[in-house]
Amino acid sequence: MSTDDAVVAGAKRGDADAWRALYREHAGRLVVWLSTRPSGDTAVAADDLAAEAWLVAAEKICGFSGTSSEFAGWLFGIARKLGGNTRRRGLRRNTHPTDLHALAEPPAVPGPASAHAAHDWVVRALATLPRREREVVGCLDVVGLDVATTASALGISAVAVRVAHHRGLRRLRESGVLADDQAGSSVRNASR
Image 1 (cartoon, rainbow, N blue to C red):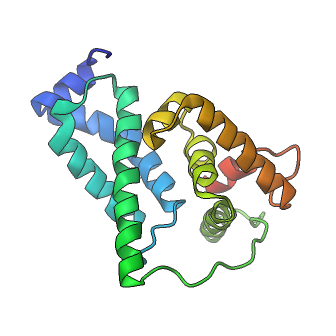
Image 2: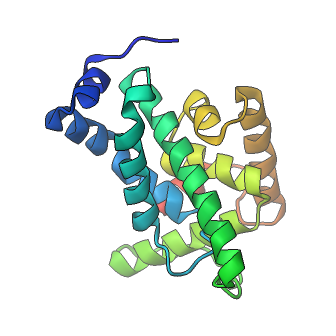
């Protein structure tokens, strides 16, 4: 088990500056990642799940031991579990989205409208993948996590992350969503 770095130790003591540093480092990526995952409940937004993950992290930080970069895997794991609970609750309520539109290439015209269209394109492209591949490609290519942090966040091995990533990108290329030379760069670029 690794020892706490200064930021994590400060967060455990309740230091507001330490929490701000953790939040600045991980909050944006967490919301982006959650927005690429199907929630199963249209009443729950990615921002809501992210906020709930931060609350759980604040409640359970004393049980965490590691560095601020390892904190990302722990936080994303919390969010993944909360998302699963939301999906199950949404299925019971029958509040899941009805259908996905056909995939279209992200627009080439820059601007706010194209950013939303590109985000929608990424979400629809990822929705075509099996769950594990969707989660791995979302973590690695959309959010920019590394293999170790992705493995920690999803509760799987690093080898399983690499295999799912390879399979997911292959499926996207075979379906025509990505060109052979684009691999994960189109997903990353369209999500920004």
